[in-house]
Figure 1 (cartoon, rainbow, N blue to C red):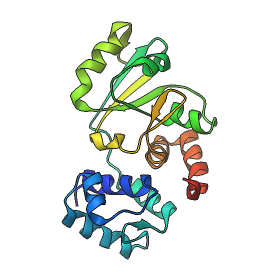
Figure 2: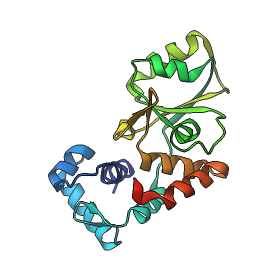
Figure 3: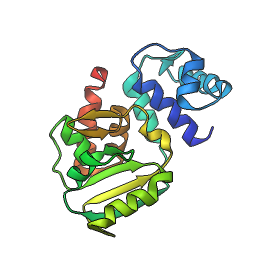
Length: 192
């Protein structure tokens, strides 16, 4: 099975709190029903789900970490006051890693701002970020990947954050203190 489709299905399973049909899961994951049924059988065989109900959330997140694909493209910028810029923009994004974790738990030092954007909005983001900023190195990282990564995003403190499960994945893959933060969130994953 292709990575994006698998990750879409996992993202929906871990983001939705209400019970859903396989058809609804396929629709939300933007996959075909046969893909969903085939993949759910695999996940059931591993003991993570029963139908579309997640029965072992921590295990499912750990499995997701093992199959996660890196973003297609990463661009770094130096931007004056990136959080204020994000609060004001109408462009679609989702904050992840350091700042997203800090909004929720206040564990990590705010070293940089990482956001996911849709590839189709790249030029608009580039224009916005270079208007009063610079490209290359810096305090802000833009990640371009499957647009479905924005599924389940949540608004907290005037900022759009990735879903909690996506945040755990991203923190884990950053390593160092970010992995510590991910492990702390993973211990409490039943709350999410």
